[in-house]
Length: 232
Ligand SMILES: *Cc1c(COP(=O)(O)O)cnc(C)c1O
View 1 (cartoon, helix red, strand yellow):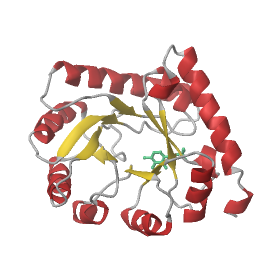
View 2: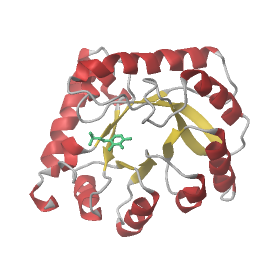
View 3: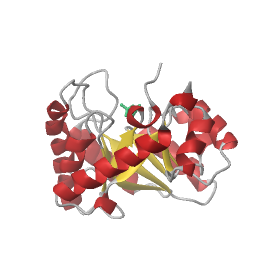
View 4: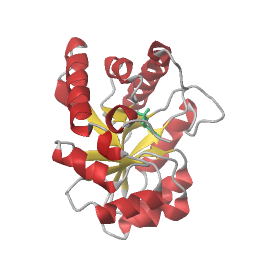
């Protein structure tokens, strides 16, 4: 029963937590953006969050996203954060402002091709599997550098940074080394001075571990449960 979840109150609490964590880490709080992860949630929850001041939403599944895009009339901004199949890129082309989960060149090529049909450029992040867990998507660290270089040669795609999902731990501190490693990798890629590549975004941190992620440099935190309640 989504109506019982105090979405506005949760958002206010999270925004405050993000701000205080950033400030204590010596960062400008405007440097961390909240992506409200609305997967499995009805469009009504997105609208409720929008009317509480949240504009940016993240979705994992193409079909669910396209349905919600049609249902939500409010001018929200959508990010795609889940595993993306190349044959589904066409359904979201032009409709999302950032794809967090580019992990292979064939996908990047298809994104570039589909955005090119609209004469637009798609901003993307490279998803890196920092932990090396076989169950996680994402490229290896060495693969990330090669992928960024290859993406920089595609006409309708622009690499803005990196994204990672560490293994799940009960203790949020356990995720910290993976966040720090993603930041080091971004620094290394930045030093390569690849044309057109900015490396300014680090998408890391979820409901259970966003504080550590912000302390390690996250610019985008992806938070679902702490805003919308638990998922089935
Ligand atoms: C579901 C999901 C999130 C949000 O997770 P919560 O623990 O609900 O905050 C963040 N990122 C990705 C990629 C997800 O799939």
